[in-house]
Image (cartoon, rainbow, N blue to C red):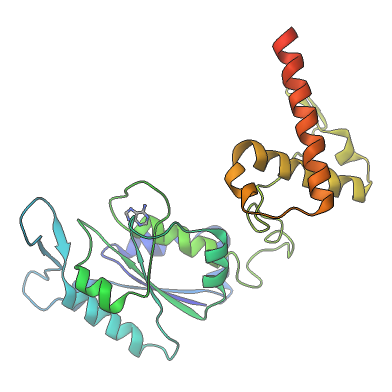
Length: 258
Ligand code: ADE
């Protein structure tokens, strides 16, 4: 997969995409990340990329022409459609489902805004979609682009060492991940749940699914409301709820049980 990034801070993108799983995917040739600085496409002596906002008020807006020229160069550099994504708080929120569909494309182009944003005419004519990484305002799109590059990069075939681990992610089946433990089995902070040491793979699978369902019910009921549960999941969630509510009643009577 190839990701082109239009940014005034190419070092930020290159450095963040150089470490961990995504860095390894780049080294393995599974992911190509190329940055394009609009300043290199500005033709005045000051290499101007922004201007005051029309109508007055604070803040600067990114100019159309340096962005258009950068995009033209990106289009020339490959045959696949550029599919331009503008990272902005005005877009719909990024989800794992969206990440999966973008990760299957041969190529995407990310536009990172700075200042008050990008001239709306560029957005209307050249941008295919806007995406936000959350309901808060960053000082630019670079962090959001780095998030998206990480999320699509780790899904490239061969990027993760354990082939199963992407399938077991939180959200990949619409649920939060179950808790994980490692050695030592006994610790001052508590013991590892015995079922995980039982070697009974069917029981472990059921326990993990039950924990995933229970956590989603407790922490993100909105995710659960959107998902149809099969018979086994409904029964496991019911079991989790009963145990959870019983533990709460006990705690209300006698204080925390540890
Ligand atoms: N740029 C500024 N804030 C952003 C956000 N929340 N998501 C994506 N891009 C942004």
